[in-house]
Amino acid sequence: MIEKVVILPEALDDLVESRTWYEDRSVGLGDRFLDRVNEGIDRIRKNPELYERVYKDYRRAIVHRFPYVIFYEFSVDTITVYSVCHSAQDPQKWRRRLS
Image (cartoon, rainbow, N blue to C red; front, top):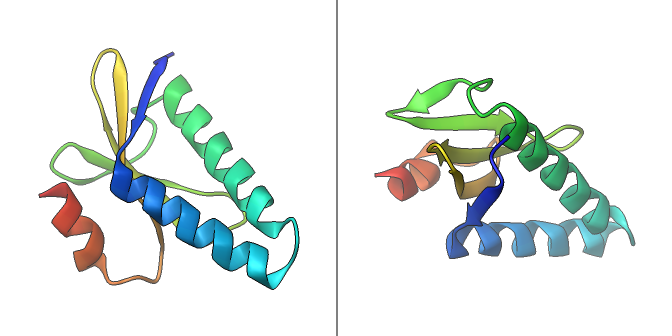
């Protein structure tokens, strides 16, 4: 299991924006969204090679129960999260971050 997780500032912005959007729709929904993202990151930490490569060494994990994906890469001791975005967003958004 990889212990160290680095969430880049842009990915944190994604999370804050998405959590706020869900929380504005229904109280508590934003927190449930963050719980599912955290569960996704835990799955990545346990088995980072499980998810498919989508661009170079970057991988994509789907967030359960929400239409979001986590884009990340990993090394021996660190997982770096580059983006947490809605699956219907323009793919150029995450590709720019991964370039």
